[in-house]
Amino acid sequence: MRLESTIGDSFRGSMGRTLITAILRVVTIAVVAGGVSIFLMSHLSADVGESLECTATAVVRNSANEDVGNVVIADGPNGVIVRARLRGLSAGVHGFHIHEKGVCAPDFSASGGHFNPTDVEHGYRNTAGFHYGDLPNLHVPESGAVAVEFFAPWLNVCEGERRLLDDDGAAVVVHQGTDDHSSNPSGGAGKRFGCGVLQPTQEVASRF
Image 1: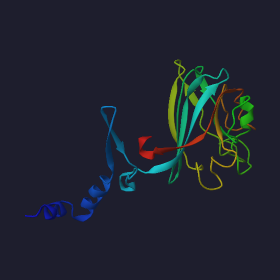
Image 2 (image 1 turned 90 degrees about the vertical axis):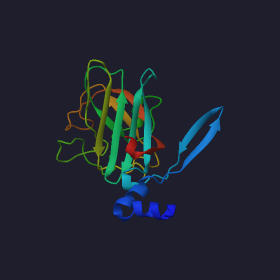
Image 3 (image 1 turned 90 degrees about the horizontal axis):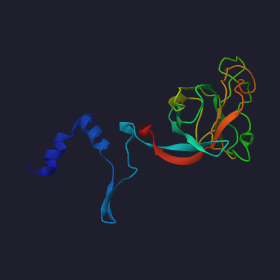
Image 4 (image 1 turned 45 degrees about the horizontal axis):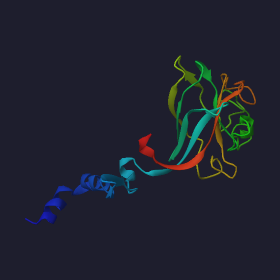
């Protein structure tokens, strides 16, 4: 029996097509400095939930210019996924927002107000709200470190009127206090603890 026929029989039908699609990736093996590096190229199938998406990443720094973590925001078909890993915060509840300008210097006020392309009021609990840059509070334990992941279906990273990476960019800001999700202009969240400019990157969405 021919090898080609055997392989064809094994992958007939929709199940076979899905399996074939899932393994369609190009592997390039290069010998570098006596070692072997394997590069998985970007031919990843949407059928298995993997695709290269437009992604933005920010390194968050405090007022002493110390690196206190990072935020990754990735486009998807229904909005964005936000992942934040932060440290060095005081225990408690901290406001967390996307701000309208991709600038954190000379001080964090340079990032402007919340990202608000629809020009409405602040807060999920405000019937006249909410800002597109409004995000859930961060609940920080005694360790001062927190890792969160959540959806923001009203945002995009790269495309459309609600995109974050527009002409003046955007920044993520962590506040010292709690966002009450209702009062203007920023929920009474107080001073800005940390700021990070969102920069375009490329990530595989399924790695979130």
